[in-house]
Length: 255
Image (cartoon, rainbow, N blue to C red; front, side):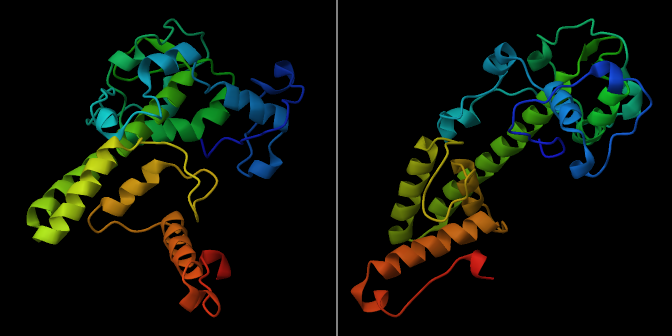
């Protein structure tokens, strides 16, 4: 959740009466945000454990199983309701237990709500209304739920396109290449879709979902991809007596 401070220290003392509903403006500069306020705002987006267990796929599912995992559908129609009108000061009248069985709001709407959640919390808002279901006031963590589901839908689409690309290339490849492509296809489907990886060159938070981008047609490589490729080349060079003594391969940190 990039727009909310990720504080690792113990939550500092926070007095709601001193902050909430006092007409204050949430700072745009993260460095100027009170730590207690940052923790409090972040806590409002925390999805309850039982909701997470009910609707979110485990990270150790294979790519094939992940592609078959049923996620809530994304609403395609545009929502005319202004996002700030969807925050309400009243307490929720819906516990959100059925969220996973409904379609989620549009991507643009979710992103705008996510950007405004901190100010809404500071203003004393306690619930959010999905414009598709008027009159149903949901807990604020519903925004966090929609945001994570949206991310999953997009990741699922990337893996789907990667597998389709492999299948198409397998049909068009030469006999020697086809065998390699089929092996890659088989291995990819058995790979965990979001398993943490510690291969050479991978970042601290790199997972196997990063590998899907290697298999997309005309996809742009990210920093992680380049660093992993250069690390692999460096390992090969170090393992070869002919190149180990005079060849050094660096990654992007050299720049």
